[in-house]
Image 1 (cartoon, one colour):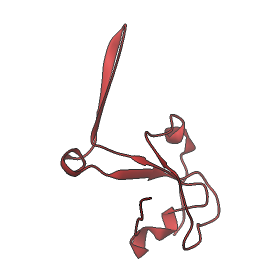
Image 2 (tube, rainbow, N blue to C red; image 1 turned 90 degrees about the vertical axis):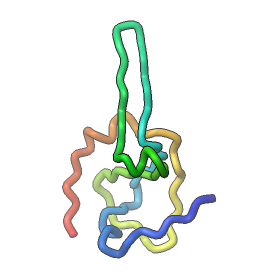
Image 3 (cartoon, one colour; image 1 turned 60 degrees about the horizontal axis):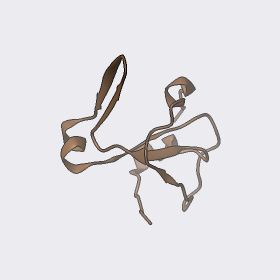
Image 4 (cartoon, rainbow, N blue to C red; image 1 turned 180 degrees about the vertical axis):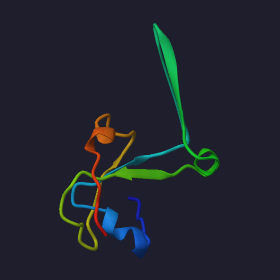
Length: 85
C-alpha cells in the first residue's frame, strides 16, 4: 500500500476516476521499425515518481483509494480535460 498526500492547491485535479501510474523518469520501447525513448524530469529520473491523469468526473472525496498502475494508460493524452478550480 502506498499513501499519498496531495497538496491542497492540487486537490481539485484529483477526480473519482483519476488514474495514477509509476513515472520512473524513463522508458524504452523498441520494435522492428524503430524505437521510442520517453523521459520525465531529471528529478523523476533520479528519485522516481508518480504521475496521474484525470478524465472529467466529480472531485474525489478525502480518503478515496486508487490503484497504482505500472504504466500510463495509452488513451490518457486523448482525454484533454480542462479542469476548473
